[in-house]
Length: 115
Image (cartoon, rainbow, N blue to C red; front, side, top):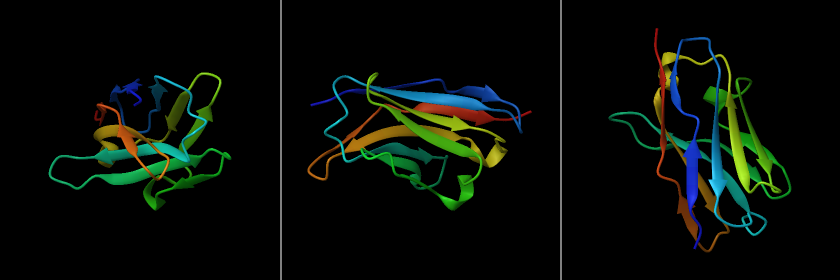
């Protein structure tokens, strides 16, 4: 079992930046992938970005060039740096980790982009 705790969400103006963090309760070496999904009101949850345990990254088209995911194994933490934020990025952002046998989820952190 592992707990994932997100932090860093909040309110930001369009064009601004925000970094959200996901801290795991134990070593993340065993997870094949960690990453972020988001869910806006009335919409399905969608994959934003993921990073493998070999540091390979993948991004949804709607965040490419704006968001960067990184993984710090020494701190058991994954980060999502979000730049050039748009109102349509408003959502609850959920961290996840998976080793193909099981997937864990965090509780989510709200990101609101509004003037």
